[in-house]
Amino acid sequence: MDDFSALLAGFQVALSWHNVGFMAVGVILGIIVGVLPGLGGPNGVAILLPLTFGMDPTSAIILLSSIYWGALFGGAITSILFNIPGEAWSVATTFDGYPMAVQGKAAEALTAAFTASFIGALSGVVLITFVAPLVAQFALRFGPAEFFAVFLLTFCSFIGMGRENRAKIIASLCIGFLLAAVGLDSISGDLRMTFGSTELMRGFDFLIVVIGLFGVSEILLTVEEGLVFKGKQARIDLMVVLRTWAGLPRYWATLLRSSIVGMWMGVTPGGAIAASFMGYGLAKRFSKNGKNFGKGEIEGVLAPETAAHAAGTSALLPMLALGIPGSATAAVLLGGLLVWGLQPGPMLFVEQKDFVWGLIASMYLGNLAGLVIVLATVPVFAAVMRIPFSFVAPVILIVCAIGAYTISNSTFDIWLMLIFGVVGYVFKKLDYPLAPLVLALVLGDRAEDAFRQALLGSGGSLNVFWANGLVGTLVVLALLLLFWGPMGDLITALRGKNHPKTAEAAE
Image 1: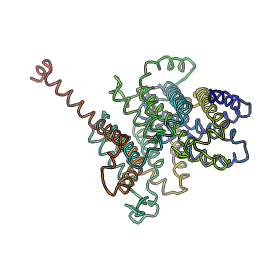
Image 2: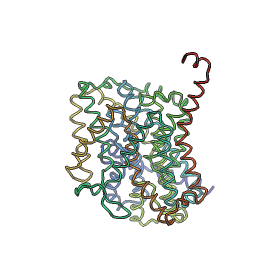
Image 3: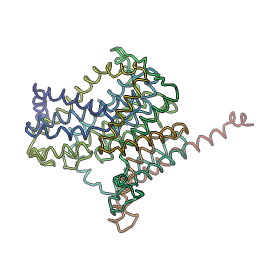
Image 4: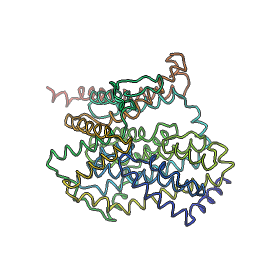
């Protein structure tokens, strides 16, 4: 009852006119941050963090968290319109979002993405509101072995539940792992596969690779097709939004499943990137339209957006309750709390109750404000589709180059972007999936670090991955998902072989 009263008081604080203004400004800035490749939510929050040091802590955290919500929403815009992920977790959104835009359904795809973002983020806020103490206590049980088991679960689900050629999936994953190994080994301090290049000491930056694989390769493919931008006739009005909303209840199972996956990945923390891929993979496996995924299926937009935003929001829970940031943005916000004289952890809910519940209330209102603002500005983004691609392509290429350059202020990164653009073009022409490569590149080094740390702690014994019920359950679940697809294919083949009509047709 006390917490409920505190939450109501938090809503009163968040609804003050100046905090509402900070909320709106933050969401708009966040959308811009999310749209620009190479900037991203963590960088946007970090850039503006110094401006908040003289502000009231509650107003400051409302502004910064609203930038985060806006970035979560904005990352889907370029993913759908240009096949360029504005945020790392928006990669999976390109798989079906961009094909929908090409088919002239950009408005439906954007509406679905924004609504799914709202639902996912809302589920994360609800989790923070009601189960913070229990989840915080559970998260304390995660060590290197448990983290590796979560990553293993992600990789196995992608192989076992994917519908593409599994040999190509594994090949793409292996290339991603190879790229992730380049640079300075964080455990031993050794240089790996740098070939004497100082630029490769820091490895391949994820955003540079993604911008090249998805953005530049798409420009190359479009140039090959004669600079025809198939989605340029897209239009949007209120009826499109209402019609899209009317069709969402039929996907309730996908939304619920993706929300659960996202909350799990956010708290453990597996991360929004892993959550988006896992949400997409599960939706593809269990959907009756799974064969249409990758061709413009709205369910393929709903699943990754819901999972990613549920994870991104839930990642704030361990930061508030334990002082352990569950994401890069949460780490930046953690630094802000310390600067403002607030110590994140269990006592924060006791000593700074007004601040905590004011922040939680602003999460509800910030997500609602974000949904309204992005839907109101959808016509602006959809109008881009009407511009001839011969004009848009150079602009996209320049934006990609600027995004790649600003990451480390290095022209070497621009050349890397172009090289990976050619790699992405070759992959698409040979029908190799890009998603496994991206997934392995993002999580490969983290999985390797967790694996080696677990073995160092156990003296080299693999029993550490069965040492307790939590890690054992995760490993068993990963193996089940790994063999889920092949076993299902085998059973289907045996049934077809033994079916009378199939046997007759074979004869």
